[in-house]
Amino acid sequence: MMNNIENLFDLAIKQIQESENIYIVSHVQPDGDNIGSILALWMALKNIKERVFILKTDEIPSDFLFLPNINIINEYNHDDNIDLLITLDTSDESRLGKNKDLLNQAKTIINIDHHISNINFGHINIVDSNAAATGELVYKLINRLKIPINKDIASCIYTAISSDTGSFMYDNTSAETHEIAAELIRTGIDKGNININLYQSRSIERTMLFIKALETLKLYFENKVAIVKITRSMVEEVNAKMEDTEGIVSFIREITSVEVATILKEFNEEEIKVSMRSKRYVDVSSLCANLGGGGHIRAAGCTINSPIDIAEELILNELEKVF
Image (cartoon, rainbow, N blue to C red; front, side, top):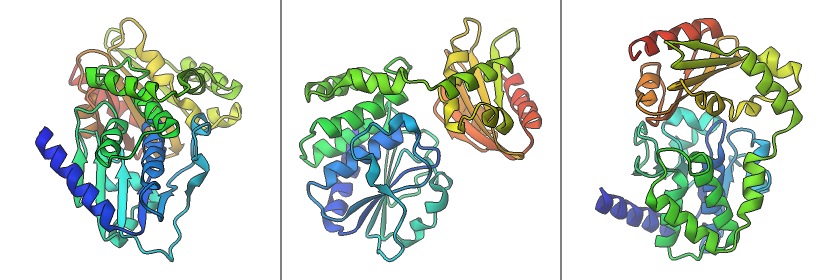
């Protein structure tokens, strides 16, 4: 596996060196791993290439507005040719949202990801489910390019890895994850400021939505499953945004008896985004795959095109097979 990944890195580097217009694209509902990774790679490639751009797919959550160069993420200029399109932390084409059509315009696609459910849609697929975060793979690619990792690049990679490991708490955190984090810290990053922005800056609106979510909490299967629901009206009532649901599902997983925590988010009347987390033994990626989604063993998601109460029933039917 390692030799194969190294060969793929070399192929990717050759393609980067031979390309003029390089576009890096985010996924819908971008998270810390996605945003940190795309910014870090952009900053690195700007050292060796003049025309490197990041394409905006969705709104950037306020949690990450502190990151360096966040303002360079822009809409696609349709007058440009795409020699190379690099997708990060994106398991399938649909996750590219409005930028999905660019896959047909790009001469070459490099797909870098750590989701086990990745469908390998690129010409070069650097997919390693053993990596704790896509940020780890970006770190390795930058090192292989022999581009120095400065404090700004390191801050973005640290954010990527910290976000996707629950501040290095989740099972996906490995010895290598800590080794990479140590190297990033040695560049002089302000990890205290990063941690405050990521974990200690909850707005009043987010706090009120958090409280409303907990009012919907239901426990099933001898309290081993916890489910909360967020409707559009709840979000509007407290003047919040759907991105303010971040952290709720992890909080309810911390209940002593809970093995699987699930949050249902109503984006439209028949568009329910589901996030699922497990603690010890349930493979939630398999459960979500049965509903058309995917992800990791301990963290996965899917979209259900039904009203929120029906979506909850569908999820319970899947969970019943496990419990």
